[in-house]
Length: 334
Image (cartoon, rainbow, N blue to C red; front, side):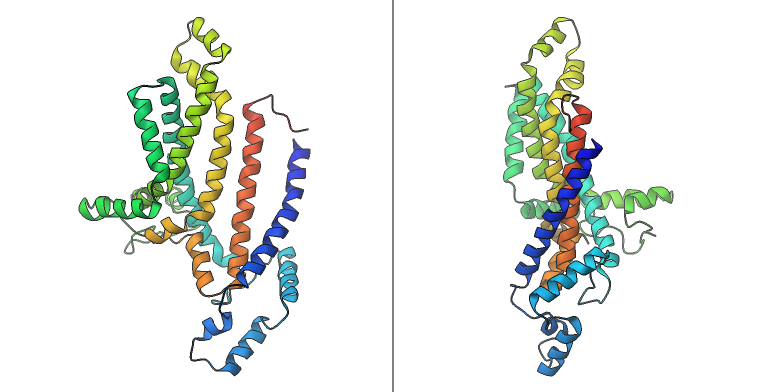
C-alpha cells in the first residue's frame, strides 16, 4: 500500500507540471494588460511600462514560466499583482470557505443520495422508486443559478427564515482562528454563532448539493440492483436475516465502490466549480477569488489558485482509491 501511495504521489509531479504550463499559456492569451488594469485607463504609457518591468511582465514568457516554477520549488506560490500579498497567505480564507461549503454539500448529497438510491433499489418499481428517480432527473437537469435564486426568493425573502448571502452576520462577526467557521465556533463554545453559521450554509449548500445528490442516487440505485440479485443476498434472506441488515450490512458494502468513485469526483468538482453558487450567495470562496483575479489579470493568483485546486482534486481521488482496499479486501495495490 505504501509503495502504491508513493508511486501515485510521484505521478502527481508531471500532472501538476503539465497543468501549470497549460494554465500559464492560456491565461496569457486573455486580452488585456495586468499593468494597464492595475493603473487604470488614464495611466501614461511610461507608467505602464515601468510597472510591467517591476512585475517582470516585460520578460519573455519562458523566463516568466521558469521563474514561477523556481518559486514553486521553494514553496512560493507567488505574489498577487493587485494586492502585493503572497498568494499562500491570501488564498487560505477563500479556500477554507469553499472547503466548508463543499463538505457541507457533499454530506447532504451522500446522506440523501445514497439512502434514496438504496430505498429505490429495495422497493424497485414502487411509487418511491419512480418519484426518487424523477426527482433525480430533475435535479441533474436543474440549472444551479436558477435554483439558487428561487431558494433565495422563497426561503429568504418570502418566508424570511434563512439568510441569503455571506457566511456570517455583519453585526456579529466570527472570531476566526482557522477560517473554518463551523469548527471555530465549536472550539470556542459559541453555539449561538454556530447556529448562525449553519443557517448561512443551508441555502448555498442545498443548491450546490442538488446535482451531486441526484447523480449519487442514480448510481447507488443501479449498483444496488446488481448486488441485490446476487446469490449471497438470496442466501442471507433464506437464512432469515432481516432485510434491513441484508441491505445495509452486506449488499451496500459490495455496491459502494462505484458510488465512492462518483463521490470523489463530485467533491473535487465542487471545490473548483462552485463559482456560480458562490456568486449567487455572495460566498467568499476560492471560485470567486480566481474569477476576480481573471478580471484583474492577476496571473500569480490564477496560476496558483488553479494549482491548489488541482492538487486537492488529485489527493481526493487518491484517498478514494485507498478507501477501495479498506472496504473491499479483494482490491490490492501491489
